Amino acid sequence: MDKSDISCPFAKARLNDGFGKMDDQDDPVLMVLRHKDVRRSAHNWKTFQSGAKPGRIVVPSEVNIRDVRQIPFEVDPPLHGAYRAVLEQWFRRPLDENYTLELKSQITSIIDSALSKNNIEVISDLALVMQSRALTLLLNVPIEEAETWISWGTHVFRSEESAVDADKANILYDYIDDQIQQKIDNPGTDLYSQLLSTEVNGEKLTKEEVKGVMILTFAGGRDTVINATSNTIAYFADHPESLERLRQEPELIKYTIEELIRYFSPLTHMGRVATEDSQVCGHMVEADTRISLNWASANRDSSVFDNADEVVIDRKINPHVAFGFGTHNCLGATHARQIMKVLIQTLIDKVESIEIIDCKENIETLGDFERKVGFDKLNVKFTPKK
Ligand code: EMZ
Image 1 (cartoon, helix red, strand yellow):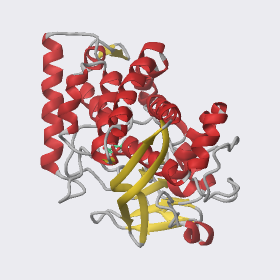
Image 2: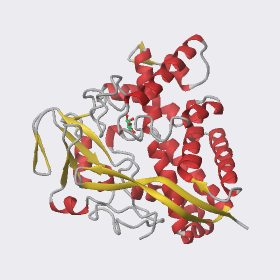
Image 3: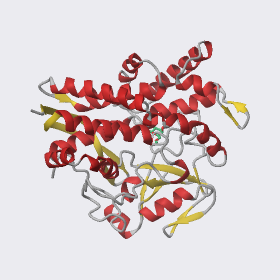
C-alpha cells in the first residue's frame, strides 16, 4: 500500500445495507452511503433540512460551541437562494486573472521555500500556510492577516484535546466580531465591507448574518483545503509517473483535479435533520433525527465509478459529490479548484520528485468505521527539476 492511498471503510456496508450508523454526542447519525441515495436525499431539502438548530447538521455536532447560524450553509430554500444569489459573484472572483496571478505568486514562493530546504513538514509548514495566504485573496485583505490565522492551527473548532473545542471557537468569534466592527468604522474593499453593504430581500445584512457568512468562510475551507493539498503532494510523491504525464499533457490537469478531489473526499459527510418521519434506503428515519450524506462513500460507489478505488488522472466522466450536491453545493469550490490547479501547475514547473520521509495519518472515527482523511504530519523532501 502506498502512503497516499485512502481506502474506503464503507464498501461493505454500502453494498449490503446502503447505510451505516454512528453515535455523535448522544445524537445518532444514519449515514447514507450509496451515490444515488446521497443525491436523492440532498435534493430532498424539505424532508432533510439544513436549517435546523445551528451546528446540528455538522458531524461532530457543533451545537455546544455555536449559536450563530452559518450562512448560506444552515439555511433552507427559498431564503437560502436569496443569500446565495448575493454571494455567488464574490466567490467567483478566483477566476479573475489578477486573483490567479497573485495566487500563483503565493504558491510559487511556498514551493520555492520548500525546495530550498532539506525537508519540510507539509501540513503545518506548507498546506496550512498556503490555505491561510490564499484565504486573504478570497477575503481581499492584506496578506499579513494570514499570520494570525496560521497561529490557530489546522482546524478552527478542533484542538488536540477536543473535536469541538469551545475556547478555540471563541478565538475565531472574537476575531470576526472585531473585524466586523473595524469595517463598520472604516469600510474597504474586503468581504466584510461588501457583506455589510449587501441587501437580501430588501434589508441590509445584520452583524449576526455577516458573522454567519464569515464563520463559514473560515471554517468550511480550512481542514478541507489542507487535506486536499497535502494529499495531493503525497499522491505525487508516490506517483512520479502521474506528475510526468501531466508535464507532457497539461490539458489533463482539469480532470486530475476532479479525480483527486473525488478520491480524497476531504469532507467525509454532512448531516441533515429530518423534518418528518421518512425512509432512506428502506430504513426508517424518525422526525427530528439526523442523517448524513456520506460524500466519501458515494464517491467510491462502483455502480457509478469504474475502478472506484483507484486514482484515474484522466477520468472524463466524474459525477463526484465531494463538493456536495444540489442547492447546497460548495460555495468555495471555485477557490478550492483554483488552489489545486495552481499547486499542480507549480509542481509540474518546479519539482522533479517528492519523497515521503515519514508521516502520521489523520484518521476519523465514525462509529465502527475508521476513515483516513489525510495526515496529521507529513515530512517530505522535494527535489527540484533540473
Ligand atoms: C462547517 C463545515 C462546512 C463547520 C463545508 O463544510 O466545515 C466544518 O469544518 C466546520 O466545522 O462549522 O463550516
